[in-house]
Image (tube, rainbow, N blue to C red; front, side, top):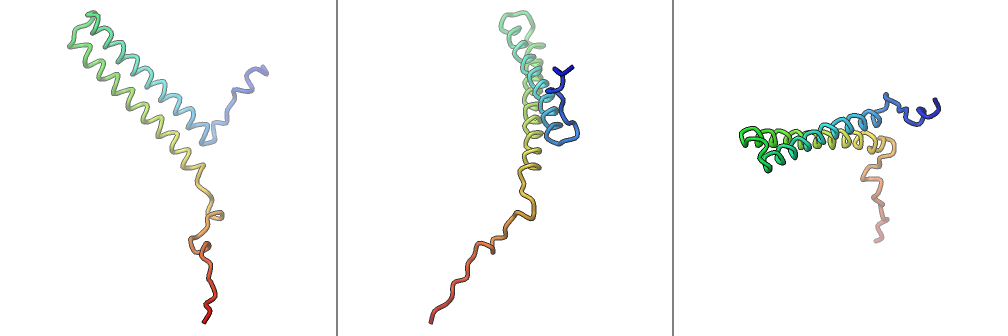
Length: 104
């Protein structure tokens, strides 16, 4: 049973859940891309009529595009949550200004 231990993930952390969600969207995108390529292949060989193959290819391409966009959004949301510095470490713009003594 020690073989399974490296593959356990913490499902309560946001980054682990985002990776799982991204992986699921990527799988859906792969399925959509395969459907589109398969429909175009069947159309080119003549196995399917254009009335069936063209809408199937468009639907598969639309699924692939939508799913890849959702996968990217899932990862960007985690990057936004984890890469923001805390309020205590942020510096105000006035902290960088230095007052020089005026000489007359």
